[in-house]
Structure formats: structure tokens, C-alpha cells
Image (cartoon, rainbow, N blue to C red):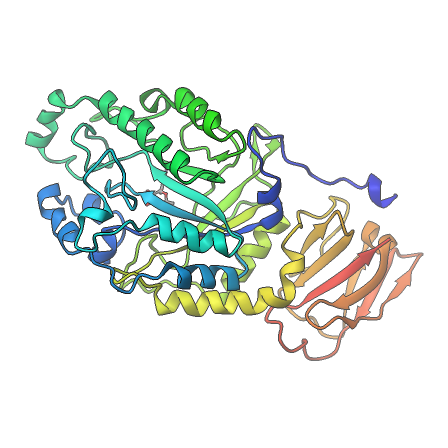
Length: 427
Ligand code: JFZ
């Protein structure tokens, strides 16, 4: 078969511009809010059923004196990340920017300043695109009614107060703040809403009807037609967002491959969690990035900064480790996607493929003894092979009868590549 006749999966078209997104592949998620002071998960208010008047202790003590978003932007850029998504407001309802629609914002805390503007400026000045995570849930707004996730879901007196709450007034607030953010920080590249709550026998759910999702999407696209919108308004738009798990293949909707992005944490929490110890290794994190791209997806990897405004040293260590690999291997990530379906991938390996440069990347999760063999259709297209990290040639032998390419391997894997990659030039 000719190279151009091989089967390449392409995602369904999207309303917004996803061309940069499916090229850049790798972004930084940042979960930061008052919950960083609780330092035990961003859902601490819900998990511990904390009333707002008690939770306000975090508002009264929010003073991230070491906050310097240029350090955050440098860390993201050096790790090879090409966009960032910041929680403008998480479920707790606290806003990182000087919103005209609420007093529950960073400018009214002891810190006294707008958090968001300097962050957007710092990341944009380093060439990263801007994403806003905005919570649909709001455990602080007076008109937000009780649901299955609400901190007051077991408080009968609070629940009884729902009769005086006007959820539509909250939804108007949600729409107003969305417009405020998109106009003030235009052009925002991604708006990442989260999430729609299921119904139970105790409480109604909150989904696209409650959010007035169709109207909100129309407003958003009237401000920025190219913006990407996620799927958690319960109306699929530009990107599907599998969370904390790795799909088995290219993410599909009704059997059709779509633009998708897996979002993951370093540890077991999105928000800063001081005592949580399940931190993934650099090797695991790199394999999550490679696996995602090998299936045509993106990876959005989360940092939860501390109450002083710093990235956790454990996060910095992992970001530096990722950046060390990306420095010599980002060619196998940026502009790459799933390899042609006809290409069989050797055991313990992952392919990514750049259709523009016609280069195939073989990521070797283990280093076999003696040789590695490429079989079938791929063997017909090998023109030249090098180790990506140092551009050292890898000689090979092609057997036309068996349709195989054998690549002799040195006993030891090359230095400077925790996960070695062979760059295979195709013809
Ligand atoms: C949501 C948030 O609750 C969480 O704090 C974080 O921001 C994450 C990125 O998004 O997590 C979810 C959302 C939806 C479900 C589960 C976790 N769900 O529908 O099962």
C-alpha cells in the first residue's frame, strides 16, 4: 500500500478551533482556591459537610504571599506544556479574579489582589494558550440549591431553605460571570465547565436544562467563535474529557472518534493535599502522555498549588523530570497522533505518528535483548531509523519475503532517555 492510502483516524469536526489543540497535545491543569488552606482535597467543604460560616476561616486567612505566576508559567513551559487551564472558580464558589458580580473573590481576602490577570499574562507571555475551568456547582452562592454533592445535603434546616432560593438567579450569575471572564481575558482558548450533577431520590439533578446550556453556548460563541468548549454542560462541543482513567483506544461518541483530552492528577487530589502520598512517578506520567497521543488524545496534567502560592516540591520534581524527556523527545508528541491502523506495534511499545513529516515514533517501554522486529505493512515503509534523543543511526535489515525489519539493539539502552524512542523515517 502507498503511505497515503494507509488508514489514519481523524476526529469528527468541531464547532471551535481544535487544530492547535490536537497539535500541542500537552497542557497544565491548575486547581487553586481556598481549599488549598484546608490542604486535604478541593472537596473538603463537601466531604466534611462544612457550613459556609465555618469555611469562611479559609477566606479570612487566604494570603498567598509567595505567589509568583511567572514561576508557574516557567515550570509549565519547561515541562513542554503548551496550554494551561486554571480554576477561575471551583465548587466552593471562590473567584480568583476581581469579578463585578460577587464579593467572594481574591481581592477581598487578606491577599487583596486579583490572582487571575497576572497568571494569564505570565502564561501568555511564554506562548501558552489560555483555558478557564469554571465550576457549574457553587457551594457558596445563596441561590444555589442543595444536591447530591452539596456540603449541606444532610442538614434538614438548610435543605428547608431551598424554598427561598431561586436557582435561576444563580444561573444568571453563572452566565454573567462566564461572559465577564471571556470578554475581560479575550481571547480565551478553552472554557472547561464542570460538572452536571445526577438526580437521586433525595434531590433533583442539575444538567443542561438547569444551566440553560444551549443559551450559554450561544453567548460564548458570540464572544469567541473559535473557543473550545468541553462536554460537561451536557451538550457535546469540542472535546471529551475522560477523567482519571486511560481509555483503551481513541475516544469515541456513538462509535465516531472525537477530539479528546484525559485529565489527571499527580497524586490523589486535584487541590493541594499535604498528606496524600499516591504521587505518580515520572515514568508513569510520561507513559500517560505517550499513551494518550498514541490514541489520538491530549493529556491535561494537574498541579494543586499550596496556600502560600507555590507549586509543591513534589510537583516541581515531576515537572522537571517530564521536561528532561520532552527536551529531546517532544517531536514524538507535538503534531503526532495515532499511527496508521495497518501498523502493528511491537510488544511493550507505543507508536505515535506525524502525518505531516511522515515520521513514525516507536516508544520502547522495555529494552529487548538483541533486536526489535517490525512486522507487516510498516516494514514496507521504513527508509531510515535513528534514536531520537541523539540522532544516532540505527541500522536495520529488511526481509521482503517475511515482510519484516530487524533492528539490532545494543545491550544497554541509550543514555539520556528513560523511555527510548526510535524515529522512523517512512517512504
Ligand atoms: C470534577 C471535580 O469535582 C473535581 O474536583 C475536579 O475539578 C475534576 C477535574 O472535575 O470531578 C468530577 C466530575 C464529574 C464526575 C466525577 C468527578 N462524575 O461525573 O462522576
